[in-house]
Image 1: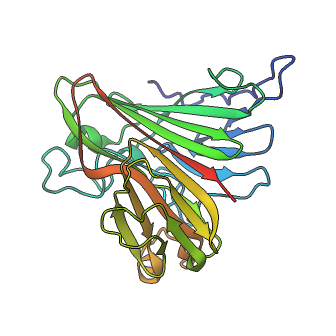
Image 2 (image 1 turned 90 degrees about the vertical axis):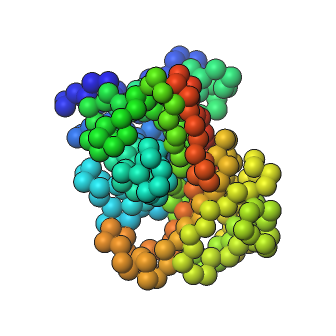
Image 3 (image 1 turned 30 degrees about the vertical axis):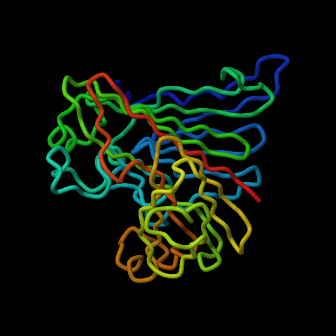
Length: 314
């Protein structure tokens, strides 16, 4: 995977005669991000640093993700907001021999990924051409020039990551495939650290966690600092975020058995330099699908796959 300093901007995709208009995909002038927009107006923007989704807008231009006004988008630190990728460790793991020396949440979110290409509904197998959709693929490997130097130093496995971001009119899907290209197995954890934008956190509640481990009520209302790891039962149960009891987001998971729910509330938000505005906790809620309760052991030549689909409801 070779980075080109002067990579040209992608041209606007053209429509095939006789088919409806397709998505447009463009690079930022400084090649720091990729933006896709459907002909109906929905859009998604992905920063190559961390392959972090930093914007998801509906057709009316309303933002669905929360991004801190003080977030660093220049590659100097992990992005506060959007959808950072956590790999190969969730938090820190000082007692785990393979990941004990890695920084918090690993290195995927602090590496520069390569844009691998795009697909549209016109070319996606099984998709109707009149269903506007676009998929963006990103890659990171142990041999990539953009890999965080701490990765090779503290996690010397050969690996290949493929991250896909798929935008449709009513949903956003993010999926990751982590392949072990080494001769020995490695352990990993994966999480999609999604910051959802809400209007007022005091009116937000969550359903779908009523049978989860360590939860004993059907609805969780956010009224203080929240940092919980749930294991829903059944594992494939969707999680729904409601505002004023009206559903707003539905989160479906594939092979990601846990859901982390996080909001820093007043004191913790005040103590984070890259969290702004300080009352921004009122407009955000992290609902983070992941495989983090234990370790995923990936044998040589094998792969771990996981995905989430966030659907706009209500």
